[in-house]
Amino acid sequence: MQKMKAQCALRLSDKSTPRIVAPLRTLLPVLLSGFLAVLATQFAAAEPIADVHVHYKWNQKEVTSPEDAIHTLHSNDVILAVVIGTPAHYALELQALSPGIIVPVWSPYETPGDWSTWPFDKNVLARARNALASGEYRGIGELHLIGGFAPDWKSPVISGLLKLAGEYDVPVILHTEISRAGYVGELCAAFPDVRIQWAHAGAILSADAVSDVMQACPNVWAELAARDTWRFVGNPIVDQTGALLPAWRGLIEAFPDRIVVGSDPVWPVDKLDSWEEPDSGWLKYAQFIDFHRTWIDRLPADISRKIRLENAQSLFTQPK
Image 1 (cartoon, rainbow, N blue to C red):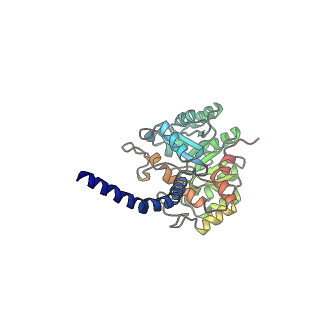
Image 2: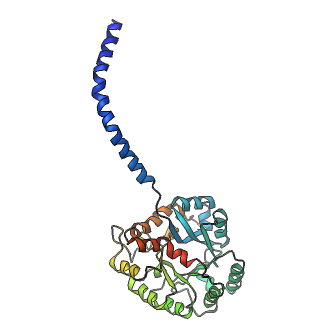
Image 3: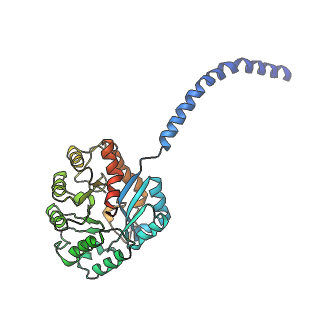
């Protein structure tokens, strides 16, 4: 009986095999081709990008180690990263791990409250000169000039740092969160030989206001870090699909050689520089940099290439 059952099973198997295997043999190349196409799309390397606004701060280090930060940059195809350390030597720690990518800039900030008090610190200029003279830093910033905190740009510390930047021929990253473009317009006109990276393109200013400064000052690069849908939310530069709004696209097409982008990996923004809560911005790095990739990829190829990489390389390359 057992032998008969085995023979029946064998005959059933012999009859059913061609009906199942033959279609699979036909479909297998198609299925494999489709799988490989999807796999290639998912793992294709993104276009290389420059990030001109990267923070590495005391309250980020407890969440993201220097090694983790470098891994994050590499995994997001960043080949140039302008790093602002708080304190400044934190930027040098990242550079030591990846000297071909990291561009350290010197920041006067050493403690959480320095973003509002630095213009009144008489030691800032001496510290800045020593830092630039060391040759370890290739810029100054991010300098926050906030309405209600910042004095006139003609004050000794602010104007002194701009003069030092001209003397050492390095860019300055300025954060001017003031509801008028005149402040930075006057400053950039007073220092025409100093390259100025205008952080967040004025933070809350419109495309028209940014355009006025760009027209008046050929030494200003508008930087669009944090002009995303999670941080400076009151004045968006993109629509719901991630495409540039007409006014901002017009600005970028008018000044394609002087637009740069950055991640500004600071989070949460409503508890900025809190002692109680670590800054987890590096954990959101891909989200911040992909925001820019989305609208950059919709521009003509020549403009896209400039904004994604070439403008940053020009800004942070010493003129010959």
